[in-house]
Image (cartoon, rainbow, N blue to C red; front, top):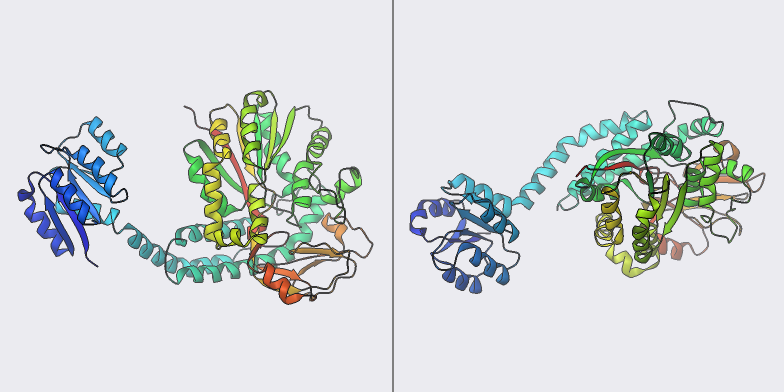
Amino acid sequence: MAYRLLWVDDEIDLLKAHILFLNKKGYDVDTASNGYDALDMCQSVNYDLILLDENMPGLSGLETLSRVKDLHPTVPVVMVTKSEEEDIMNQAIGAKISDYLIKPVNPTQILLSLKKNIHSREIVSEATQTAYQQNFGRLSMQINDSLTMQDWMDVYRTLVRWELELQDVAGDMKEMLAMQKREANNEFSKFVRKNYMKWMETLVHHEQDETRPLMSPDIFKTQIFPALDNGDKVFLIVIDNFRWDQWKMLQPEMAGLFNIEENMYCSILPTATQYARNAIFSGLMPIEIEAMFPDLWVDEDSEQGKNLNESPMVQTQLERFRRRNSFSYHKVNDSVGAEKFVQQLPTLMHNDLNIVVLNFIDMLSHARTESRMVRELANSEAAYRSITQSWFRHSAVSELFRTLASMDCRVVLTTDHGSVRSNNPVKVIGDKNTNTNLRYKLGKNLGYNTREVFEIRDPRKAGLPAPNISTAYIFAQNQDFLAYPNNYNYYVQYYRDTFQHGGISMEEMLVPLISLQGKKR
């Protein structure tokens, strides 16, 4: 395919050598000596790029640029000028030029600008695919050699980086990456199965263990309390069901506002709000909450909401550590609530700690399961991430972070768990009292293949409540989801390719823990 260019310059005859060079490179170049002729030509031809002289008699380059953008808003325009005046540059950039070249220009400069503005997508695509191919073997070795949770966090970071770089690239590399990610999740599940009960032994008994990763009950002790002790005003923002790849989509939006310190932590099992978020706010494992504060713990079979006691749980944790910090707790479910919260920020600065839970992403995940339209809008991992980014940009949450960046405070951004795209059904038999979650089950009469799930026969050792003496917990792994034999085909068809949480995967367990400090203005 030959690309068609328009070069507008009142001294166009002096540029014949440059035009001949571009012809040899495969470009068709039309020329115009003034802005009026250029506009006439733009009305009849759709150009791939326009080279435009800034200083022309009659209609100036900037005036021509404005009218060209009216005709073809998306066509890239490269301004070519003798002037290096800042005001002219500002005007040109404000009019959304694609590039700015200072005369005299040489052919190499022009070719570079064309590659940047016409061919960048295909060049980047080819380079990205080549780079991933070259790193495929190294990443496979990294997966096989991972022995610690830090190793697995590094693997997950690398996989997400390649996911983001390849998401707009056509070709087979995305499928190869998806296969490698499934392999990584299989090995990660083996790692968790091997080590989880050892982690729980130290966590339940509140023992120090350097081999155990940072987990849900540790967040306040390691992140919030030290910041408060440092004299910081702290805003803890918990985005429900927030994954590492979604954070990486929001990071560029934050980079101009905050100094960013990135970390991850490991969610406890089940990776579900009732367990993981309550563990964060209480600083306790679920079995300890049930024993110490029975009025705050809600059983699985209860119809009461499972996350209605979060503020009292925070209070119990502060009291347990004999802290007298003032705090506020807020839950935001829609844009109106977010706007109201932003308006309260000046008043909230009187508190030492302010906590806000944002529910949009969790609501999106559930809506995607229940609504065919939402599933179509978020029909891939890339689309799911894109909706997250769009929500952030166009909601009051963006204003929330901009306001916090201008205030003297520390922001801790995290989540309770992530979610995984579930595709593979695993049969489970349960009675009528078995919970409905697709990534974990608990009950006393569960039937399952032990090789297909992670089972915990003694929940107490895992810090989990046991409604009956024979209660067991089982957890789905990788992209599995747990399906009943009754109405199996309907059940599988309905829930296949939905985002679920509660089980074992990197996406669910390895979640963002981000510290943000507003940049000094």
